Image 1 (cartoon, one colour):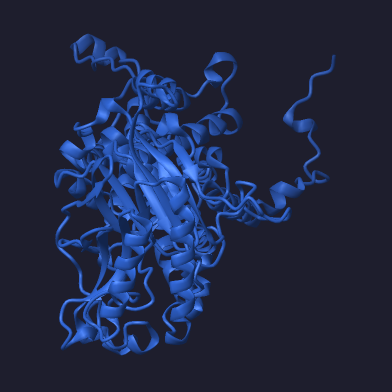
Image 2: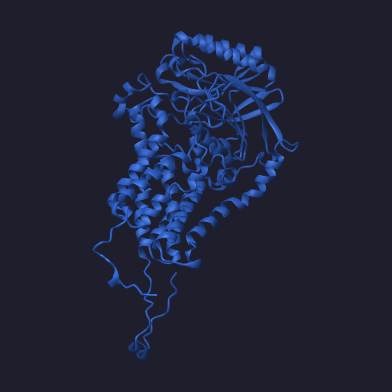
Length: 585
């Protein structure tokens, strides 16, 4: 067989492959497209939770090939901005400008992590496994820190942390009872890094045989197992308990979903429609023998207190509770000062007893929606009020987390309240636990945002909140998502329309967007009755640990210098100055 050498190669007639000629623009385009598709499809309403295990892998793989910073930054910041504009596309029902601005802002804020990824990939390349592992864990910790800053920076908007992508994957959700939802995000980023490192070793590194195995991928699998395995026995115990005598019934609730269009909700001419719908649905629920009937956020068409029409509205609600012979837990707007109703409005929740009427001690929403319920920095940004629904005055925030106590025919219900998007802030649920809540109730109104993915994305936060606090969560929305979730994140009941048209786009096969009522038996696992989770007791301790991992990863990547391992020269041997041998990777 004739040997071929470099001299025999025809350099003049050799043609580069199509990919080799166009990789300078095809690679960035492929990373951009894959990042957008995988990121968007990882989150609700898509049921593609596995995509979250690889959504960042294209960017990590590309960073390992050492592209220029300028190209990498533009592609990744653009990809994240595009992804979040699509994820938040339901905002166009309220504001097109807000959709693009908020989506781009969240995307760029998360995109900052990718800039750190570019730096880290260059500084750990070719270094021992200890350094590469430190970089991997440092990047996962940085993702956690970035998510934490989203909860408070510029009033905070922690919508859809990465962990929310796993809202239907109950085994991985359980770590949230220990670390909070950020632990799920940490595991996913580690797995993404391991996944990318495996493919980089397979295609870009010259290894054969067993050396093709990626140590980073093995570490990622171990991290996933460590996150899941300690909780499996308790999860299996709970799942065996479901539907059995050992599970305790806490309360039987009827959820009322009035589905009042936002375009007519506050129009005085349509107040009669809202009253009629609420009356009919409430009385329709009575034959199902509920112990408590729940209405959604701001259900009454006029404030329940402080306005000229409030007295009539309150009498009607109290009369309805008396006719139903069942207590009501309702959301309503109320003013605490009739002389200045516009500036003393609160978004509240009230308990209406069938015999004693409205009960003292309502819940007032603590975390308000910027530009929806108030204008932040009004002295500076007050001119924006002309483009919002708060042109006349700001809604005021409440301060108390005390649960609402409801006397039912079978006992007392202590409900920790969350209104609207308060359930996306984990610390509010923790505060409810400290105040003595035995269950949490979320009253919301997503009718502002159409019938797309907004309600599903919102419900994903409640799933994580149930696991974090180990308390069942009941959700009641104006037009969906309404149902209840147990302490382990299992969705035990969802209101869906049995008359859904065959072409419904709902991933459940039946739409959640409809007008109706449904009754559920909300159960409680006795294992967690009166007992707080580790996360409730210790709060955001995992953010601190993540920050320490970021610092350690940075130090290892920046300052680690391998010692010289070349064999000693004859002169060094003679003089005895032999450098110490150092094990590399």
